[in-house]
Image (cartoon, rainbow over all chains, first blue to last red; front, side, top):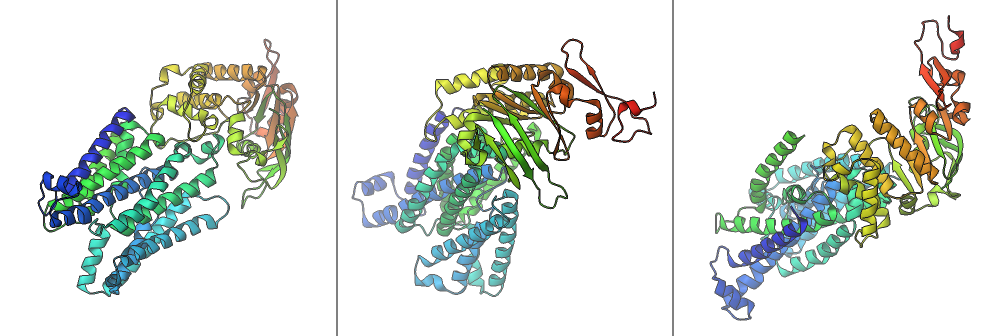
Length: 330
Length: 274
């Protein structure tokens, strides 16, 4: 498929998912209600739902979904591993420990910013631990060591979570599990602004790294011979992608499969050139998460299903089909 | 481009002897220079040390008189094309995109490829006889086709030096000869060519000078007839070899001979029971 036709197609899908995401929800609104609100009118309840709940929610979906997809594409290239995803370095585990601690000690009541802040701090701690191990051995950062460090750090945080939850009340366990499954329900304009302030410049920075990422995906030695400052690109791109992941996890919990599946789908359609792969993964990830969130809100309304369930229900069959395809074509 | 090295020494952690031990060489522009030696003699280490991707224990490598570690990687990539021993592709891409990566060092981070870049890619595909494969997925190529695509990528860099680590080992005779003829022509046009190879006969036919490595040290250096001597080769390779002169080219010709049980490394073929 031509990358420009996919770009146009995805832009349309993203625009539609934004409109549909604002239009539909557990409280029925008509298209006219929505347009009335956007023109500055409408009744106060409709205004509240559209402006304070649904708009920040769909925008946060775009930022988190797009960011995770782009981070996933970056990790896959740098680690030369098609199975890499944004949480592979234990970032989700660190964020979860932060969040679960806040829930277990009941600190969440002190302000809506406490939970995301603690999750972000946990994610940063995980990144620091994994990078610390991977760079401790010498001047070159070995991606195999990085991967192993990620697995070990994730296992450590997983044990921490189990310990905290085993000592917690049933209610805490429930809210912790719901947080870990991921949700955009906490979206407000503050979360949108903070996430955008980091994700948008970071996404542009990763796109500027597109050519070096193409080379790194082939191999570090080849990348060096073709003019890449391998260590600088590796560290900078990994850190930027890890921080995108951390900011997404902090506001939306651990939403799986977007970062794994979306880059693969885009790569299948237009090939592995990161100059197209990265921006199109952002569009596709944003649209996918916004639509998944809509399903999560509507399927069992007024009960919300954790969004991670929807992305996994779509992501798992897709990924198995992809795996089959790659095995039969090999 | 002139490639020089003085007393290059490389040690791998935990190894009992240095991988390279005080190796010096001087490859002027327009020279086709072959590096020979048994497995594990340090050929690839030498190449990587010359290109500044391997930390040196001591010694210095210079390109055009400037220390290799003072070159920025992108500057180096505009001047030196490298075909390393092996590479594996994790994600499928087309041959023309793959060869097009050779243009990356010439294109700014925010600019796009121009007609000049596309012309360089077409010329490289033609030189390596892979134009019909341009739209094929590299992961579906045969070993020989992939190898030619890698050489084409190095040519697309339009370098003033080429460094190739066993580039023809997976090629059939026709493509092996075609690539060596291409390297010879490039050298005659002024390019510096540094070639690591196990094909002693082919190296003898095409090289201006050669270097024979044994356990990280220079065993012999000079013209093909100075280096390819029976006693030296038999000793370095640990196998009896017979060297004759090719009646057509006048280049030395090397053939391994069956080893009788009494043969020990260090004895020449003339010591064999006739």
